[in-house]
Amino acid sequence: MKPSQVKPISYLKSHAAEIIRDITESGEPMLITQNGEAKVVVQDAQSYEDMQQTLALLKILTLGRKEIEAGRFTPASEVFAELDQMDKDDGIE
Image 1 (cartoon, rainbow, N blue to C red):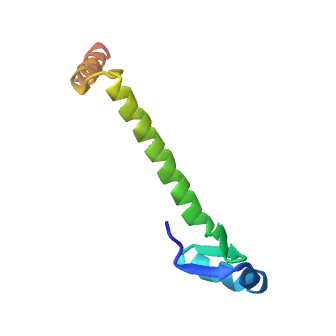
Image 2 (spheres, one colour; image 1 turned 180 degrees about the vertical axis):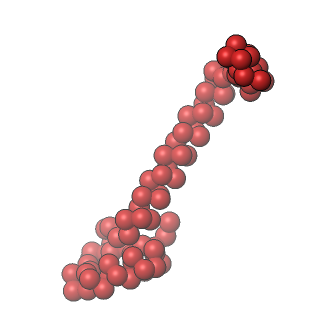
């Protein structure tokens, strides 16, 4: 994610309410600089939450891939066969 807006910290200090409104409406983050260096990114809460959920999903996928590569998995055919057997045992068909 590369913020499309870059503003100095002085702008943040003097335009906080406007910045919050704009970021909330657009969903676009803003990069805040101090002495010409990038320091923080300001973004709306929903975008932050969405990003956190995406990262969590990517971590789960990475862990799953590592498990598969290590051979720690059960083939889908075995899982479905076991579920079918459980249904039969419970009288569901």
